[in-house]
Length: 278
Ligand code: HEM
Image (cartoon, rainbow, N blue to C red; front, side):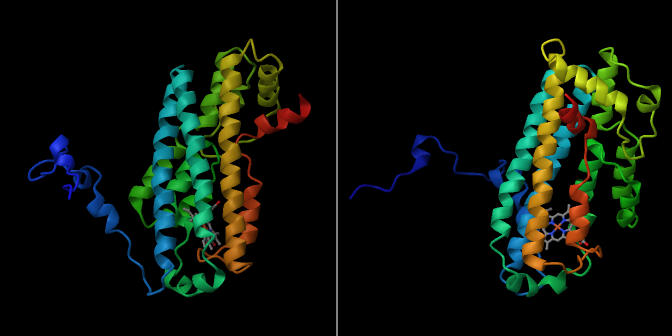
């Protein structure tokens, strides 16, 4: 009989008394003890982990979007592009994750839905932070965070900064495109207003990519992100309809009709509009 294979004989570290282990480095004790189902329903664990993993990916998306915006502002477009590619891939990953949640039927969800109380993804401050960071700013959506001054402060701080799209449009101005002062000095807390001059500038970029290659690549990175983001919204609303039909949301909105309305929100409207007029 041969002995069982022992990786220790080839140098694998087997003793962690006083050394940092995998569990320590990744704070797995905190992460893996953070699932607290409120019911005995089998499917509640899926529901909790699906949301928690989504929030972890959103955390990374925020890390990348913030850094991409800083790099872009400093004129370092290439590192920014790499980060924006990663953000699009994160959303691709989140899009695939719906396949796991879709295995939960309406019958299964109803066994624990009442236990959620009024909690809802509508109160996801990271999701709102992503929207604010990229450019979809609606200060009315700060309200559900009023009870948490720390979260409110983070969201308010984001609204005071130029969004990723503000910075992108700033790059158009720096490259010599004619962008009105009213756009460049806009009230950052307000929703973005589609601007004919900004559309004309982006059209100029698309009309001669070779001359404006960096801006052209930037525009495509933004469209790529919005494309995946739209798919996330679409997958969400379809899953919601599949699981709760047209019931009201636990967060109090009309549910599917609210989410359908959100499908119409455009993050970078001029980048979509120019495709018709090019
Ligand atoms: C069975 C699964 C799910 C159902 C039935 C559901 C239902 C809903 C409903 C009805 C809303 C509208 C707000 C409300 O009144 O509650 C909403 C919003 C939201 N949900 Fe879900 N959801 C599900 C899964 C998820 C997952 C896995 C995530 C990932 C984090 C998520 C994130 C969000 C976000 C971010 C919003 C706010 C969207 C916005 O304001 O544009 N949801 N959800």
